[in-house]
Length: 97
Image (cartoon, rainbow, N blue to C red; front, side, top):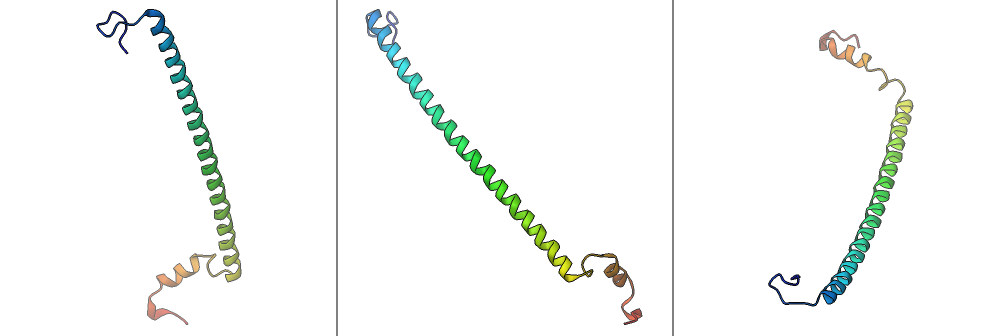
């Protein structure tokens, strides 16, 4: 907008101040509304992300429990890794089995 006396179209001072005050108020209301909408959207997205992380944590806990249950069902085969390593370190021909 051209200010009075700046080489633009001359406007009466009272009209300019009323128009710019209204324009400023409109712009302020628009920006505040936009910021509130953004805050609401970010809050919603944040809650959604936290919910998904919690859900994933619960699924990981379930998976870990399932793995532990399978280990128990299998017995000591997969629990003690020293026995298979000992068998692997012996030469193939010297096995007593």
